[in-house]
Image 1 (cartoon, helix red, strand yellow):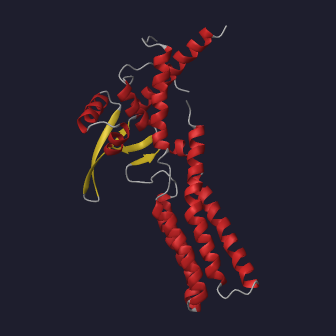
Image 2: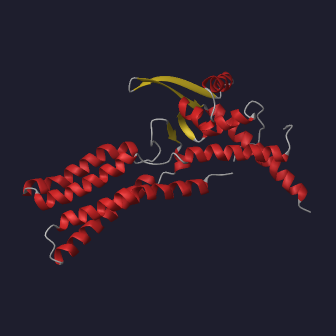
Image 3: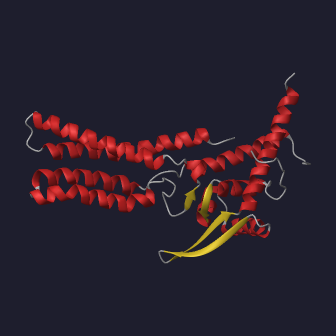
Length: 102
Length: 159
């Protein structure tokens, strides 16, 4: 279990969905993320640029079957940040549930 | 640790995480061509055994096994259904290759049993009939097997 650590950079809803998708995979094609989350190319590129700047993701440009593909993967730092953020969210929920129970 | 969100926001965020994870779990599968190719190969082996020359009937099984081994290594993990992503091993589980191989070994036994039964009943083409039966099981059962794997992965995935 990761140490709870709320991450302001990951938390915005679109970015959290992007990172959660990446966290479940070794690598993901740019188009897959775009299509599954219903984002435009530019909106998704901005999310990746922010995450890449923070060192949370790396992008690779490849030529697969004569087609240009962009593959994205979470770095170790990104995975740690995501795991810590999920643990922090679970902590918040657990604390609230304990408060409610008499 | 400081944070500025409430429990409801945290729940919503966890739901979004779960949703994203489920989208990746939905990709745990093997390419459809694998199951269809396997079914066609199985039926083909039956036909060759019944109608082909003796030397071909003897060599078709090792040839089929070699062809299967050549392609299975790339798809048997169930983590690369398409070229769009590779599902993490801890999410897909490491048991898929063993599960599929077990399924195929059981199918070999079923094919032989059916062929012997049909032959004992006096049918003229027992291997073809058994091969057709096994091909239907592969084509329909393979995707069902992977659907069960996805359900298991979804249950195992954390909150």
